[in-house]
Image (cartoon, rainbow, N blue to C red; front, side, top):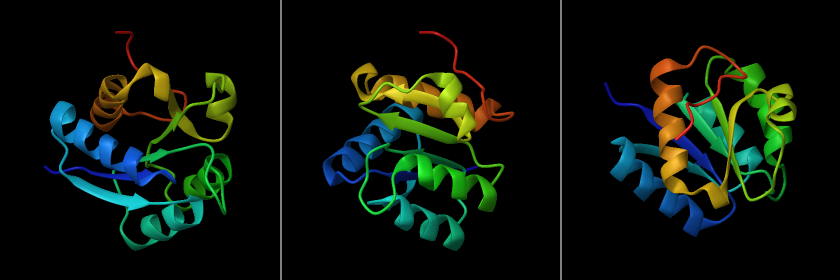
Length: 131
């Protein structure tokens, strides 16, 4: 069964690298893209993905604002915050994020997180097993 992942990041290059990484390490080949939080919400309303990856700092609507709305329109879809900023896991779960991966942890860590959440997700606050 194919899984769809929405990648919301204002950097086209980051979106491209995330897609390549998830294709290679997680076997995912169905992606949607958004350049900001508002566009992410539009994509979710059109086609509900199986998982959403959000950047924190985006124009028009940041990842935290978008997460609050996304959890109300798609409460069962796990959210992953993929950011260059440190945001404590407890604070992230307040916004509905199942996990936080910092960009300095790398794309392989993100792929591990995505695989875990797609196959074992039970709710906000889940954490991925340590590497």
